[in-house]
Image (cartoon, rainbow, N blue to C red; front, side, top):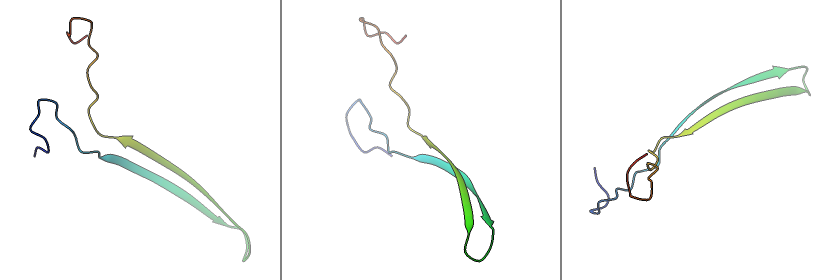
Length: 56
């Protein structure tokens, strides 16, 4: 699927995200929640080029 007709393509942003949480209830009025979340952007990065335009 293409969203542009140019040589440089624009990628749709997509994320890979997962995480977990720990909930501890101490009594009727007190609790503690600890969370961990990981997020990774899933789009390719542009290559690094030298002065002549060659990919390094």
